[in-house]
Picture: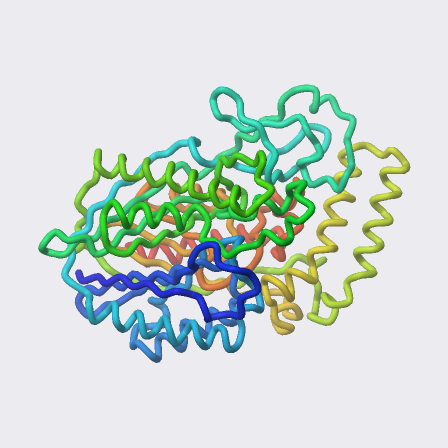
Length: 480
């Protein structure tokens, strides 16, 4: 096997609205075995329309000769970066040009390599599930404001952090700690690629949690917080640079499914960019240090002569009936949001049970999300909205006994656990937000419980069961 690493700055790709606190990068891993080639492109971006990532893969394929189905467009979902239509048109043209040039350069400098890896079990030391069911209320999501007990388990008794639009339920559940202790992705990975002389060419790390720490000031009491925005590669960037210093070469980070996962961040006194960035660096250093120690203690040699193949599959996901049927309907959504607001106020005034009020809260949030999902994040087309099915891509890459699976949109930890249980256990490495942003891919359970995943999803209850059923057959054949 040969490999080559590459790295580009994203400055000048898009029209900057803020100052740069750190660089933003595109990072590339080129792999070649025999006549087969693949490239993983990982960008410090928030979320790009799937129509534009399709164009990226098509045009980069034409400029490099690498098959389109062997090209990954992966975004780390950096909150202190850009997303949506910012990356359309000329911005994507420039990203394609820079990326193709760097991929071709990576291919030119590719060398025969050896690969060493550690599969690190980090437990819940650095990550938490930010969604929970509250007895008598329903499913809630907490972005920040949780406390941690002596064992590091997050909890709260404060309904104001649960995105309830100011509603304060009078429930016995809030007399005790409500623990946010649902499942997380406990596995992290570090791959180190070396040439035959033993020099490190690059590293690939993988964890699973939201990179949303650089914007902690957003929800602070700082009256000037809207002036604090800076572009920042968040904790994965600080961690990756730490790995580059430790091992040498170019570092690439891949983010696992993390729709419901967050790092255990300290949210106190984070009213400025400086304080938020310092917390990013603290978290990145902790996770990076743990990965380095795990690697030093137990790295194993990866058989790069094992099966090497890459493919991309397409699956169509059914759209939830209440989702707009056209872009025009999504644009003219104000009346629906107003009606949902009035229904919520009436439910509170009538002192209806908290579980009923919570459903009105969910519907109010959801009505307010339709326009931003269609125009600001997902970029769904009139054809997709009218046909009530959205095609999504799943990218697969196998080498050295590992199966990398790139899933679309923001997927729940449920996806990671299902993939690992269905295929090669810890050797299966799910990666989130590959080949386009599709908002949250809600499971039937999350559609029942409510909360942020429910508000921010286009899929019907049938979508994820269909996704798993079709993907199982496709990956089983690919992995055989």
